[in-house]
Amino acid sequence: MSDVTDTTLQGRAAAPAPVAPAIELTGISKSFGPVQANKDISLTVAKGAIHGIVGENGAGKSTLMSILYGFYHADSGDIRINGDLKHITGSQDAIDAGIGMVHQHFMLVQPFTVLENVVLGAEDGALLKPSLAKARGILQDLAHEYELEVDPDAIVGDLSVGLQQRVEILKALYRQAEILILDEPTGVLTPAEADHLFRILRNLKDQGKTIILITHKLREIMAVTDTVSVMRRGEMTATVPTAETNPSALAELMVGRRVLLRVDKTPAQPGETIMSVRDLDVRANGVAKLKSISLDLKAGEILGVAGVAGNGQSELLEVLGGTRAAQGGEVRFRGDPIDITPSANSAKRRRRGIGHVPEDRHRKGLVMPFKTWENTNFGYHNAEQFRGPMGLANQAAMMEDARGKIERFDIRPPDPYLKAANFSGGNQQKIVLAREIEANPDVLLVGQPTRGVDIGAIEFIHQQIVALRDAGKAILLVSVELEEILGLSDRVIVMFDGTISGERITSETNEQELGLLMAGVDPNSEQSA
Image 1: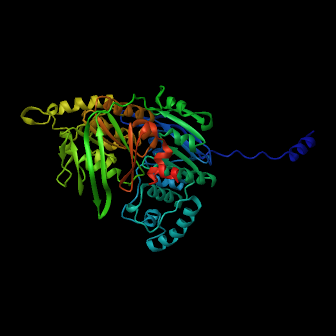
Image 2 (image 1 turned 45 degrees about the horizontal axis):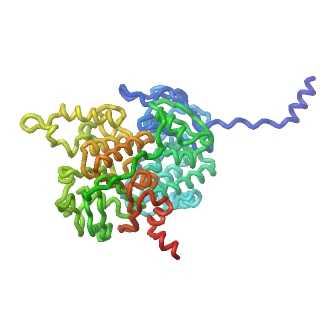
Image 3 (image 1 turned 90 degrees about the vertical axis):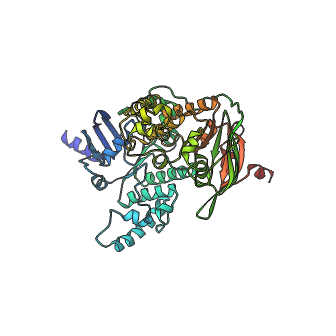
């Protein structure tokens, strides 16, 4: 009997050994004082897969990945990499385990070259020159293999955001990362740059790399991931194959309720022109940024500004918001001229009823080391409601006002004493929006209102902007998200190379037509040709 058994076993093909997951997290918990960011989280990521993690701002996604990368140490739980238990106490431990991370806000030295940034912290010895020579060759190979082409001698500060992101990915690959974590990687990218990033991620997957993609954009999850996990309020609520779900189902899992994935608004009822711009010219370092721009902002209307980043939208917002001077043209508010010389400032704009949500919330929207209650009142702190005896600031009134804004805008965690730097990017954006929208301006200038904001908060922010419009306010909306422009705007202008390349009624156009205008092509000329 034993001979038969032996013969049978010898003739049977050996079953392949099971492949250990690239990442296995078990029972991960992490608290920051009274706030529990992660609660007993378990997560398995298959080797060679693109695994998405979605959730609202403050759901604990970035905290979980920061634990995996060694920035934070979990209060409890285990981490296994390729089946082996790892004790990750710092980022070097994570790098040694083959993990690389591309952060939402890049960790690059702006005055250094691409090559210097890639080598920084991974030098082969005390002499830098041999390390740079070695890195140059490796960099060329990596760039060619993964479509990550970038000039190694370029100064990082001179590169577009999309190219800077490539440098971050190259840094991780240079350190031989087999697992890549990308935290909100498209939050600062144009649609074209985002599409190129997806091609890069697919190339990385094809080469056997494992990728974790943290994002709030459901379109991206559906387009590029194999599996998606959903987090809500610090807990893991679901993990499903991407092919077996849809955006509506994911949104409901993220928020805990049904979410409207389109902007719900009635047709606009445009009224009088509140702000007019004529022949606006702006130059910087001898380069023309705006070339004879003219437009009108009308009461009860949202005017969208579409375009690839860097075509003058930022300069337009800054001039109208009082943070940049123009070299020519004029701006009028309710018929009266507005100062666009170097003596202009945003405080004067706010006093006249012009609110401004800047594109860069870190540098221009918030004072990062200051507390929430301070940031919710900056620029409006001299208002009558915040004045106490003898003209001193009434801190109690400011605190009460801040608590109301925190509640109404669902800012998490709801702590008015927490520094702005300690909030997630989406909650930082809510702080800025709460301050500017609740000032009830006649004109609201909005730059990238939902950049880095989760799906539930996007719905809320859009509702607030539409409510301002319906109250007779004029809104200028700048966004690189064409879907947002088409869904929120009533009328849209497209900017290309500092000029307005076209203007359309939003209900009468589409992404294809706007995309051509963004490239400086007149679709009507194309058709006639």
